[in-house]
Length: 365
Image 1 (cartoon, rainbow, N blue to C red):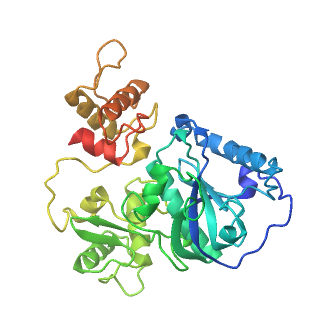
Image 2: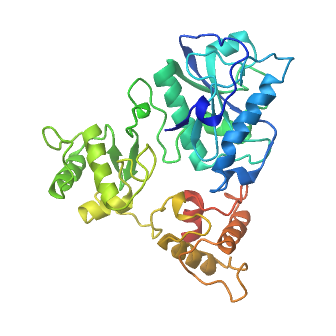
Image 3: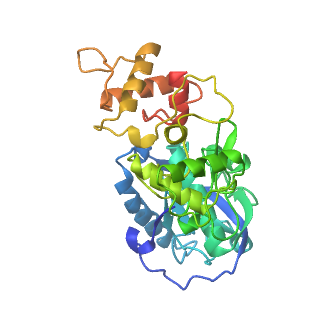
């Protein structure tokens, strides 16, 4: 979880003492409900998000009709997946519509609008689940997840985000928010992925889990085991796998980052020399992560992306010498990806030119 505290984003003091609340029945999702520029989701735009938080708080404090004591939300999640502390846990929200609704659920706002940026990026969905887990573990929130429009007459949180809520509020990898204490708020990834029909990650069980542990020990990455690897995936497996990922050059050890200790197809194949379970018939290589596609930077995955663009005829943007495959993610690359997204119905709602898992899959399939 990438938590940005009030002091780190520059919050002003609350106007009044915030009302303490011991627990809630759950969490309600909100959006800004105004224009939010799509450029806010660009890979290099995260530095703008703290300023947007300050603007949100200022607008709430200036609202003398509602007479807010602070920013109305308990947390706000930016397009890059950071969770900005608003009122925080154990503080009654001011956003759900009336006193009864404010006492019933915490409020989490996504930096989404009713125009411009309307589709939540994958990183934001990860951050929203992180915020739910944080409020469950640190604020005793119940398991209910709803939208602002549940119980109050409003369009909030927008159709895109509300559809995600109704579908179960899953992360992009398909895992759901976890209840109880000691989950991802601890800094240890406790979600699962499925590779070849087999589960990996905290709580996964089977002989394939033992095989991973044995391979880690054989390669010298077993120091967190107290009694050796076994058939149930524990925090020790996660920590040992994280050491292996770091040895491969992966960065980022927080949950849902590249070296968080949960396997991906590429690292699992490198560890075992094969992929257990069902054989996939897909020729699409595993998605390398959004960090592979940053303007001006190089990554071998960009060459694969370029070949897909050329093969499907989306190569009209170039430097005058034709569009050539190469490892650098340029503005020409981004514009060609955006053309593909606009031409693909499943992607047309947010053609920003930055590949996500769905863009990668559809372009290369």
